[in-house]
Amino acid sequence: MTQLKRLSLAALLLLPLLPGCRSAQTTSAILYMEERKYDKAVSVLHEALEYNPEEADAFYYLGEAHSKLAEVAIAENRFPDAKQNYETAYQNYKRAAELDSAQFAQNVQASLLHNYVSRSRDGKIEYDARYYEAAEGFFQLAYASLPDSIAPIKNIARMKIQQAGENANDPKLLGEALDLLDQVLASKPDAYELLADKASVLAKLERSEEANAIYANLLAEHPDDTGLLIDIASLAIQDRQLERAADLYVRLIRLLQSDGKPENDEQIKNLMTQAAAWLAGDEIGRYAEAIDLFKEALQLQLIPEQSTLFGRLQAHYKYGRLLRSQAEAETAPDKQLSLQEQAKFQFTEGVNVGIPTVEQFFDCGFCYYYLALCQGELGDAKASEVNFQKYFDLQTPAGGGGQ
Image 1 (tube, helix red, strand yellow):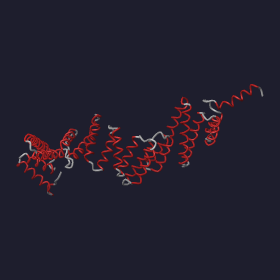
Image 2 (spheres, rainbow, N blue to C red):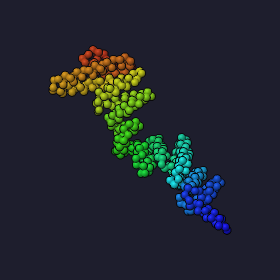
Image 3 (cartoon, one colour):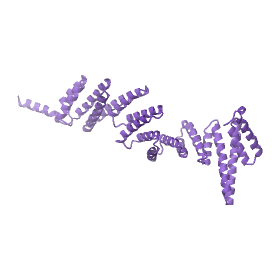
Image 4 (cartoon, rainbow, N blue to C red):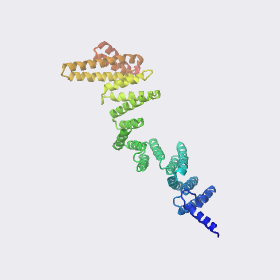
């Protein structure tokens, strides 16, 4: 052998050891992959890494080979093998990008997204068809292929939450959802959406104290999240904390109003009337705020609604009675007079609301009733008697009746 040939052979033997170069083994592995001999490709690529443990090409094509092996396993319904191959592919892809970011970062990202999107799409198809077990399997594969994303686990958890809802909040399904959420939260403890989902599950499991603790932290960090406010308000309703629910609704209303979107008007109106009804309840008695909300809701209604008008009428009467009782208990003459005038104003407002209400909704028995009460408080005994009679007439079977 000539000296030149000896040098050429030495150069070839050293070539795989040079960083940034593709080894002969990796080139062979690519050919095996084109022939769909993925196991053989994996074997040869590991040989390449024995020569050069930092060959980025070898790691990248290991990712490609394991991705293909995962697809084969899926076609053969070997989901555990598919999951393992996707996890291995992910590790090799990431190593390739670490070793040679300039060459592989973009390709690695494309390959990871391909695996992730393909399996997520499969999961959604199965989910839409209500094949929940198959959907869960594909979402698990999506997570294995790209564990940087929490969406697949969130999808599985929400799927189980939905299934639980279809089965009277089945504690077993809710427990499985909670376990899934905790699985990801162990490595991503600050994942906002997962924490919100966990709080929602805890609420459904009637573990309100734990749910409220999570919600309190989330709300401090995300005070303008309308979805979060709705979830917290729902828990407050579940726990019969209606004053808290009302305050949360008002906070939500102001956020929706700040958007200035006309499509929010219907939701805002409904939130206003519900919050006002709670605040006007005897157990809460925040009548002034309730009246203001009823007024705002009426401004959003092209045609004033009976329930909103009645709610405002009733709130004026209750507020007037509260102020009158406060006046009777007051010993300072000037304060007593002020409270009496405020009470009279509320009864007068009740009459101003009640008259057009009964003119428009002439079968609203309780509208006549509270109108009569307001008129009686103002000393208009004749008008009060007439409206009481209409109320009583509507309570009889022939009269229809009621609100």
